[in-house]
Amino acid sequence: MAIRPTTLLPVLSILFLLTAWMSGRPFAAEPVDLELVLAVDSSASVDYTEFNLQLRGLALAFEDPELADAIAAGQIGAIAVTLIEWSSAGRQEVSIPWTVIRSAEDASAFAAEIDRAPRMVVTGATSLSASILFAASMFDTNSFDGTRQVIDLSGDGYNNQGTALSVARELVLERGITINALAIENQVPGLGDYFEDSLIGGFGAFLIRATDYEDYIGQIRRKLLREIQPAPIS
Image (cartoon, rainbow, N blue to C red; front, side, top):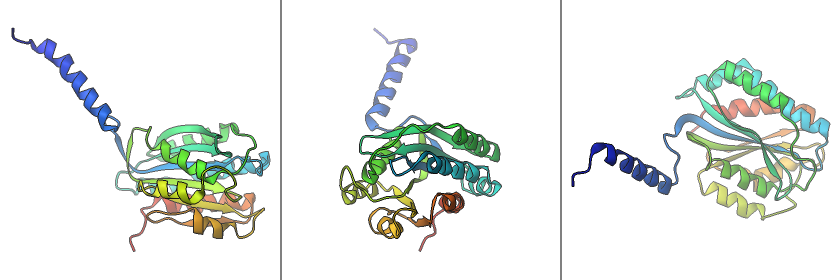
């Protein structure tokens, strides 16, 4: 008995979906210049004023026309970004889900989302290792195909809980993900040295230091502008 086209079409659709699912890749992933996870410290060492300064610094950065220009200058002219909070080994939360930014209007809307975001993680240890592993997992669940995948982590202390940072870092770097960091040195002078030696890594990785959370506001703008631009080849 001949199979009618109307019968064959659903079968082919099911086979296509099954093949795509088995490949572990999202359907029709949207191309972007950069997939960026913003990971902000929400541990016990960060009070509400300091936490809000992190969010305000990020919001001001995305309101900056220079940042929108940097996005537009990319080969594709778009980035995908998400915001997470982290503290202890089992305490990470997605504050703002993956969002595409293609224009100054998109960037301004994302800044408004940051300004409205509540604190979702309150207190906890400082697990840099768990935070970068969680951030890396965020790239598995989005629907984007970025030229680069970057974790942008801000923190004010040493890794003191969870997997050894060296182990977590190696697992992330093996996937071709870049880890950049902003060390807030208000409580731990020289924290940037530790971040540089033990945390950052990958193609074009870099570290920026802030003396305190007030200084963070200007430094995160510098960091994002550098991050969005293509990493130099050297």
